[in-house]
Image (cartoon, rainbow, N blue to C red):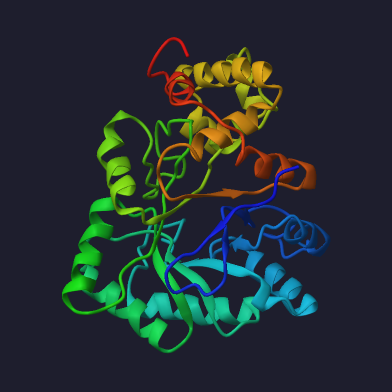
Length: 326
């Protein structure tokens, strides 16, 4: 079995695991006790945990675990603020809402600081100066360490960081877009989700390669497409396995062809389809981290093992339909 890999993110004092454990799932969202599973993830070396105000009671569940185990200084917390109101689409990207969410998150997580704090969505009508200044104030108060944006375009992040550099402020250090082998064909939630997959987003991927900003990829396995529960021959019956968001975002003939190619390489290399898809992510020359939500300890170990599963450049191109042979 392979061990977890770690790196550092500016302003985060603790090593950050390359794979984050995601709490946008049960039992966390309903506030249930997931302590045994969280213990197991930490024992595997997953030191970084992803949550958000938007994830129901997940912060409360995570906070109860942290308090009961007294392990705050052993883990890295990522949380998010400023998600739009789902029912109305009302935007909440402003200082008042960011601070409101922060105080609620600190209370729920039972901590006095958050290691990585992200805006969950963007509002291009809000000048980046307000956002950068707000994050810097939170950082100066000791309530957050690194910060950045989830579902922000690379151009908006660049704009924010140019403002920060010009005014001697701390820039965005983290971005969390959708990224993975599966191309996101449309916004699954219809509310400002940003992907850096597909041919149209090659400039974005080039920017990430050039800047090496920390990129925390969500839906990294295509929201179940590469989970191993689906076969490439299951296109017509995919809805029996994939939820409505996965169907909207990832159910396409091209993505099922990517799945078929994963199956071929998995059989040849003696590994699983999820391991092939996970390995592909970490072979893209991007400073990438992957969020994984799983209720199975063995599955997380498979993901960790995939960090050391080698794929050639030609195999990566083949998996992404860029060539017909490897």
